[in-house]
Image (cartoon, rainbow, N blue to C red; front, side, top):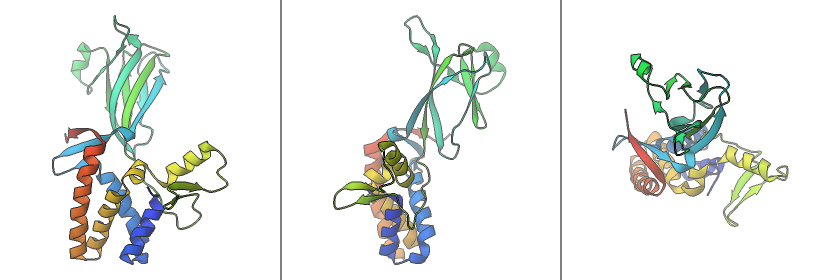
Length: 234
């Protein structure tokens, strides 16, 4: 386990490049994001820890839409269920995802995306319930040189919180600002990916090659342990 800033500090110290703090912070964020793609097998990867759910209440009789809450981290809308509309077994209706066109004249329950919005049709009218499930990338983290409210204690194996964080809710919110599930469970794979980028940047070819090889090996283990499902690029 670690926090984003502590991992950046570690790599800065290892590489002896205090002048590259900003670049190393970028490399750590980049490595976290690229773990969601396997370009060698042409696959997009999805993880259970990135899955989010919400229930919407339709604010109009028809034409109701949902705006993606954070386009910078949004990955894929995986499931839509019209909870108000049920079949003969009492199960919610799962509409078909489509694109606008003449074929909609022959369809009733469907949804489609336009820009940063998803539009729903035949969901049950005003105040109908619509269940959504989607995947998000972890948010980009920001390096903090000082004033850190949360740090990881390697000896005690616990997160230390600033005394100002007096409730579990405040501690949880602060923790979300400094780390994520990948850093807390897979620090080594992120660190090795960032090291490979640093050594490549400073033209240390031998170390870059060694770190990249280790990164690829660790990345495979990470995927086999965490991937929920994969999807080919469209």
